[in-house]
Picture 1 (cartoon, helix red, strand yellow):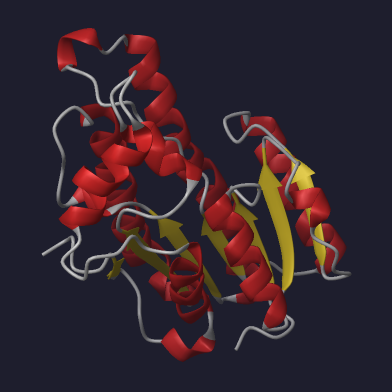
Picture 2: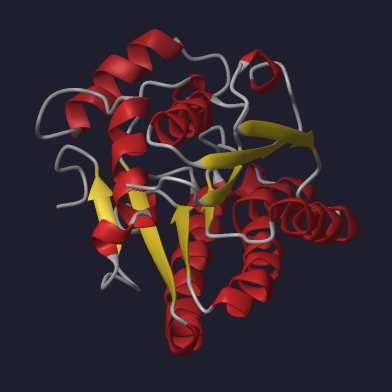
Length: 247
């Protein structure tokens, strides 16, 4: 489905990112992982995988890493933005400006920076696929997550605006909305001091009509579809993989 495509994956050091990377590799892609931490990335043993440790908010570093990927491989066919951070459930009056800027920086600004560089090189080939992993919270907010919801809403609308702009160049841009997923990040949405396991069960699992948390592999399969030629006519779409949470 993606054989010999060169695909950049941000957040490759997280649970969801790791599943995405391994699924793309299994299907023949050449994958470059980007993350601020390399613990999991350096354990992926595959000759078609390489990685860079990078802060995605450092503009010059982002520019350089995409230039290096293009110089090495001669093409960039896909970008998957899986990097993201959560917000502890917090009353609006207790959210600091630094917290707001940090959450919006990783979840929105980094998406802009990576998409800007990816499209620069995709235009040379007049093809490419961008998948920005957002969140069902962008369309079904929860109280206390106002900074997170705002950052994800911005990422969704940016992705759709980008889809219109780059369509004449044969580039597609789509949103994937995960529901509550069985990753370490899910527990970070709890209030500070709350029982994380209890919150997962009583709040998140019970909010999913199909009755189970989403697995990272479920998300990886959706990504595989959106970056592959099987979705060649799909752009500007929002794909919910959420067990019905977004309804």
